[in-house]
Image (cartoon, rainbow, N blue to C red; front, side, top):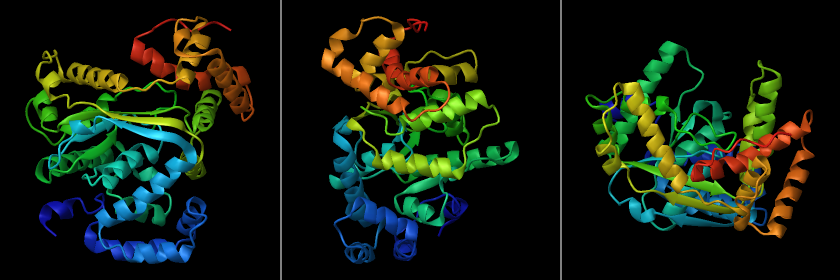
Amino acid sequence: MDTIETEFEDIRPYNDSEVPAAIERLLLEPGFRKTINYFFPDVPIEVTEQKLRGIKTVKEFQSQFIAVLVTGIEKMTTKGVVFNGLENIQEGKGYLIVSNHRDIILDSAILNSHLALIGRDTSEIAIGSNLLIFPWITDLVKLNRTFVVKRNLSVKELMVSSMKQSRYIRHTILDRKTSIWIAQREGRTKNGDDKTQGSVLKMFNMAAEGDVVKSLIDLNIVPMTISYEYDPVDVHKVKEQYNKMIDTSFKKNKVDDVTGMREGLSWKKGRVNVTLGKPINDQLAKMPKAPNKNLQYDEIAKLIDKEIYKGYTLYPINYVCADILTGTEQFASHYTDAEHDEAVEYFDQQCQKFEGDIPLQRKMLMQIYANPVFNATGCQMPLKED
């Protein structure tokens, strides 16, 4: 292992030589075996064991196991997944795929699984260390080309970790010509209002020298948008936001993260659309120079947001919520009376899972679906007063 690879030893994905041992560890874990039985109920565990033990490389693990698993999840929990924009990423070239983030696991897994099934190079995936709750989850994600973003650090530790992450991203994209998927912000969007964090963009450039814009152009940023008709963890997200509102000391625990991952995989999603936009290099090159770096990053974040919004697939439920929350019918042409009633019935059912201020949580739930409409259309109408 060379000096560069040694530097990233604690965050890098597994390489081919580590695959057999990691698979053996997985097969000994009750949590992993339970997951397999849930998603492959008709396949004897012995058959899966034999298949996994025949896998010797990361590419084989992704194409022969992960892609099959994700395809099964799609069949069980969606009404189909549509991809757009694959022509915007070329083989043999590294891209930084900056995506909105709705589901802990599936946002990146759906993309990579589709790429694997059509024989395209997959991307590496950034994941927060707070989600590596059990050793077997670490093995599973590192087999799936995931590198670790360390969380819950002191200010000093965060600076060191961010610099290493920045170096790793640049090494992976520029030297290894391998793409990386990363969320536009730390953590999932809880309210449907997708906004790129300037701190994430600054991290990209920590290991670079020179001009802000030029350093980002080097990374070939491609905006990605994933749109779920039904957010599988919408109730989970509202409960978390609501608990933080009524108790400022509220903090998630490991059980909450496990629940979020499980529900994201297993609950219904309706239709799903993934759109890869065009690289924003040309737009960055034409961007006026801002008075200072912070303002420059703000403008770049807005550009990425705009491209992500262009990639939205908006469903009837999104437009219904936008109209209900604004007390208008400005988007009524985008849904039928039956689709309106179906959306209202869905929210009636979901609200039965809440405790406390139900009307407030209902509004928070509907905002998850309405905010993409407001962002895509630029609508800034005030919400209807109750």
